[in-house]
Image 1 (cartoon, rainbow, N blue to C red):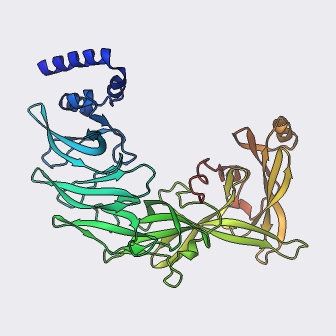
Image 2 (cartoon, rainbow, N blue to C red; image 1 turned 45 degrees about the vertical axis):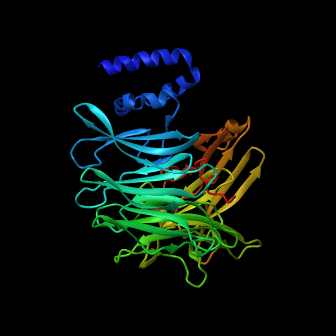
Image 3 (cartoon, rainbow, N blue to C red; image 1 turned 90 degrees about the vertical axis):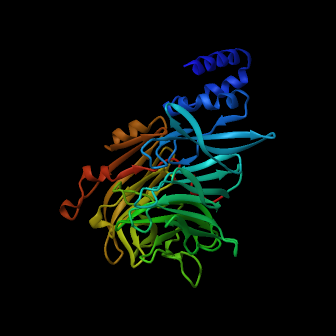
Length: 444
């Protein structure tokens, strides 16, 4: 109690005299675990030798977290800080233990760079060993440093260190425990490669590196469920030759990684190439991430043939061809997309029907198996400007959404194939494109 009273007096005196240091203290997270370590770190904080840091990604959404890392049934506190030594700042992980209400520094894990990029706490084996995976970042650099460790009989041991571009933690081999999977530079080429770290018998085993598509600028990578109780590392990239493509990295039954669609002949996952910057995503909200593949549709026997691009969303696995689950049409320019009725995904042709100031429309036609354009089915309007609502009323349109001053509306002309779709179901198949979908995945 006396120590807290003294600390309070010091803080009051300090806050009254040094406003720039006060900002650091005011920025401290108001969490129970951070209050517990404030007494230990008070002097460093007051002298400006330490500030809190929030990891950019991973299992920590704040600068401190309470978690049992030693397996003794009591929680330790993990604190993410930036320290200063000899005038140079560096990131550091501090882990505190508690005994009879008093805190003590159990270990610190210093890093390189100027911030903490990620912190993960994967359960590594059946005995409950919790790993401490830390990524160290440097501003304006795509390459990060990584430290992996764990506690054994109450003592921290470093297990692995290396570099990475993208880092994730997931159960890749379906054994019920997490592996560490990351993308890093290939020392033998100018490209990137994926590596998996698997913990066993007190050590870390690195899998053989798997190359990503050659000549591709990697834009993002993340582990996600792809169905069949499988997790894949999905690496999105851009190639000047192939366009946008995805490397799908899976773990085989032998515990090794495989790049499912990468051709040995070309060195590229060319079968996933597409012209639109649409990434893999859980587009139908079923908990499974699907792979987007482009499909060209063409109407024939007309004076001017029409070519349009649809997106088939596929489930993928290393032993089967991509299975088409559903199909969408994207209108990136107007910011919307529409999932086609499942039974008609092969028989719909979208055509730009109106393009004028304040009004644009896309008309969906029935397309026969021979590629002949048939009945108009429905039309999507995008209205803007001061006459938008009046146009909507005069044309008897059904409003779908309003965004950024635009009205999105539907008009149904014909229904065929009985109950394959209704006016209500068509409206439910329409969606706006999130504003960052294309921006984050465009080539730079």
